[in-house]
Length: 177
Image (cartoon, rainbow, N blue to C red):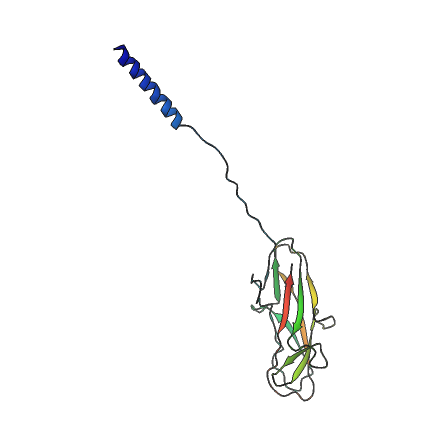
């Protein structure tokens, strides 16, 4: 009987030890990481190429107009908007147009596709007193995380002999941050 009792006690002890081993706790950590890089959006678009910086629309004028003024407007109808991550400084560079230098009276030109050109220029002020040269830059203040308005204006100058038609130009623009 003693052997049976000894076996029973040993079996009970083994069960007790096994249940304690199953109740053990293991602790540790999970390391999580997110790296943010500086970013900017133009008129709400976060792309890196083919971004619409806006349109400079001089409207409809008669062929004998003197000057026509306009402002670069974003797709939503407001002025150009730049939103950069907080603490990020940016610069907008207005590069060459398709018809630069092809008409006297302006550094840029609108063309009708038939060899006729209307001269125009960009300005950084509504009074058209501060011209923006080809490859000229506009500094965007360091961002506080809110969208910033960038005002860019244009002035076209009429000249004698212009036939009626639609005159256009495409100007390259870069945002560096």
